[in-house]
Length: 287
Ligand code: GLU
View (cartoon, rainbow, N blue to C red):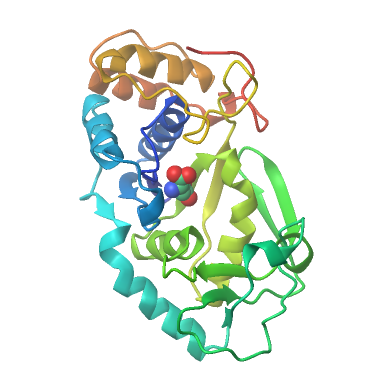
């Protein structure tokens, strides 16, 4: 089996324990399957970039002694590539310009397609991808069969914002393809996005990917750890301890405290994805 996996953090805040779970699981799953593991910094959303978080991500990769199999790429350096894909989608009549504001979307945030047939000029408007009335299903390696109706559950979605920012959905699909990614391992908070990404990939004729969505680590107030609710940044002076905790949270056999590189080697040898707790949330605190 050929396997290319990746860890694709957004620098919207320092990495936290939830990010570490994704890094460790994507790394061990790739390596245990004799695959490659790549790192990509998803920094297209410039207004949301948090000061120094790119540096923090790179320091984490070093401190945990992860060894990416290719140079780390930054999406902000790849904007012309995404624009070329937008041109291609325009020629395919798969996208349209949209002048609706967020407020006009209604309470469920599903876009009703108001601008679809208005033929608005693309300049300085949001760009949306048309979706069909179609059920998209995929078998998540951990969460099982997932299905959503593109039109009823998701609606036409934004690929480029009015302020010119390329959306996560577009950049992630294009880069997964261009980097030859075969397996996506990431947090279950991104489950809902997967049908959108499968749809966009199919329009672009990209090969389909395998998905595994990990249960989310929670804080003691029962919220998922996230940069938005100010999850504690990973303390790089405790890399080995944190690695041990992350493997425990992922249900893996114990790994003795050692240098992170040695611990990761052992974790890869012992890796069994069937031991990862099922479900969307991890129960218990690990820190
Ligand atoms: N950049 C996304 C995040 O940090 C993850 C993207 C992905 O794994 O598809 O939440």
